[in-house]
Length: 86
Image 1 (tube, rainbow, N blue to C red):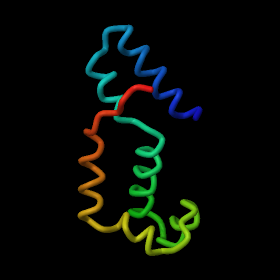
Image 2: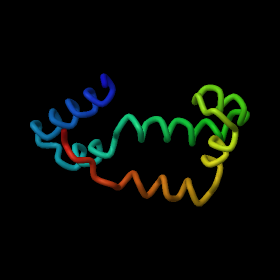
Image 3: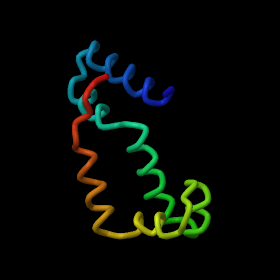
Image 4: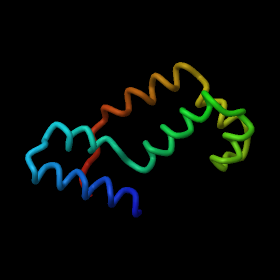
């Protein structure tokens, strides 16, 4: 994917330039993480039906999961999860 390739190349450039902490932080960025982050932000500002349609969810029940506080906390903890290089 183009977006993941950009994340990976940026991380490699940061490492090559000696910015290890920044590279480590960027290693958490994935296309899946970006999608979930976007949806989680959208549910705070837009009607649930709009978010559902924009995300391509087949039902509002899927979108409702992003509104659940416990799921948000779990999602936030996933940001610290390391991503294995490809």
